[in-house]
Image 1 (tube, rainbow, N blue to C red):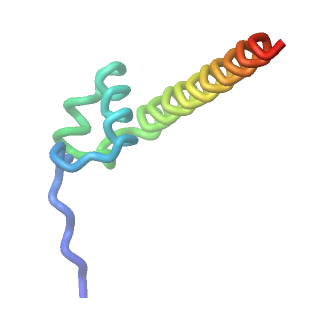
Image 2 (cartoon, rainbow, N blue to C red):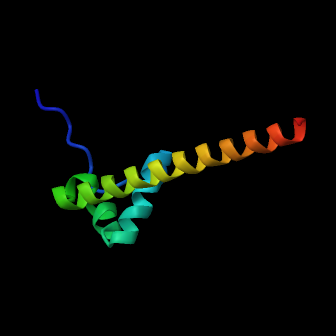
Amino acid sequence: MKSAKKPEGLDLTCLTDEDRVKLEIAEEIGVFDKVVAGGWRCLSARESGRIGGILSRRRRQERAQQAQSANTEEQMSGRSET
């Protein structure tokens, strides 16, 4: 028994936060229309990898900024106690 095939395209009404970021990146690299029309499956390995690489870089930058702001807050609270 074959399972029903999912409809082509991407449903923009129910997206996760990660999908929103990936769509933003897809728009930046020029494949947004392709993703909306055919879903994530229609991307080439190179396009998917590029989106994943940019997504990873953004996450690393966010973590570094959070760590830096936490360190700054620690330093500020340490100075006020002295």
